[in-house]
Each structure stands twice: as C-alpha cells, then as structure tokens.
Length: 116
Image (cartoon, rainbow, N blue to C red; front, side, top):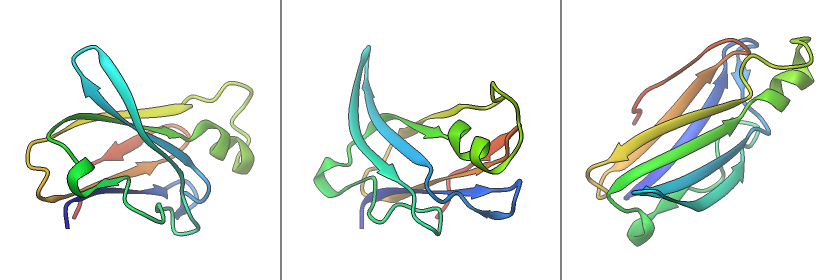
C-alpha cells in the first residue's frame, strides 16, 4: 500500500512519544500546504497513515513534531526548551512505495531515517 507513516520514540525515557502532535505539509516551490495533523497514540504512532493512495504524491514534504510541550510535561528542562519543534524535510521520489519516517528524540537531540 502506498502511504506515509511515522512514529516517535522518546529515547530520554525509553518510551513511545504518546500525545505528541505532528503536522504534515506538502511543499511546492514557495507554497506550503498542510496535509494532515495528528496526535500520536500510546504506541507513539498515528492511528492512520499521514497520507496514502492517490493523495500521496511525488515531491517534497515537511513533518513538524511538536516535542517541546511533551518534554516539558515529563522533565525539568527549564522555561525555554532546547528542542521545541523538530522539522524534518524530505523527498518522495516514488509514491507507489511505503515511506516511514521515524523520529528518535530526547530533550537535547534527535535522529531520523527512512524506515520500513
């Protein structure tokens, strides 16, 4: 099935990123169009794909993970978080494939990759 999915792993506590809000945008030249907004479940995943089927297009995308509030609720990181919004821009060259973009995150660092 052609779709885009994500999940978040909080590597600070070793748990899924439950409750983190994620926005997905499609980027077309200087235009930024919001495709979806989800709140991650107790497994750190969205209940449905972020985009799928005929709506999943070749092109550039942007995911914004709002992690600042999440970590503020579980840590004592101070008034202004080091990481607040994690922005990942990536390209889809073959929308007939499944793309998975996970985020591994702590209050001070993050990593991503193309998953399966």
